Image (tube, rainbow, N blue to C red; front, side):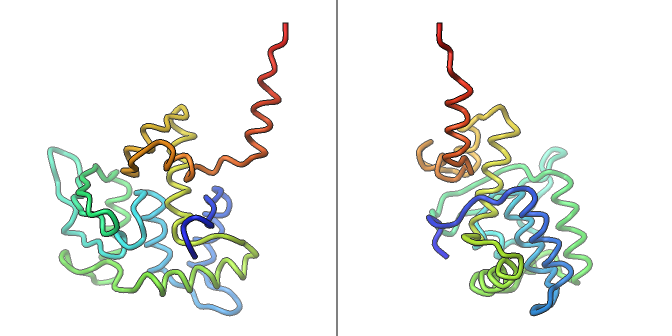
Length: 188
């Protein structure tokens, strides 16, 4: 599914999709690997192709913080950022539970396999216009809403070239815009 047609997930959709992936459904098995990859996309804001290439050795301890240094596959931009301790520990447990070595790829699967599995889960749940990029858009929307609507912060975290690009990611609907306009009437 092309990025332009995918929507940002709501918290409820995100939770339901991940829980369904972990338990399985009538027509598909549980898949902890894909669920974990998408959780990381939703929490780090990286594109799925960059998540799938991650290794534990990509994260280094730097002055009491965990740092991730990567070169984004799509843009070839270098990116260095702090990985929250909870996310690092989540990744560490996943690697240990799956006997993945420090230099081993955490998710030795293809992007297409993730997309196909996600499509099955979304069909099962009745969700439309959701693709892997919806998890990156969820990240952007949550950061935006939880940080005083700071779109420049979101732009920097996603490494977008302009705020206009970032605005497309944030799940602000036309209904929300209309409600904001209605609520802003200040007649004298």
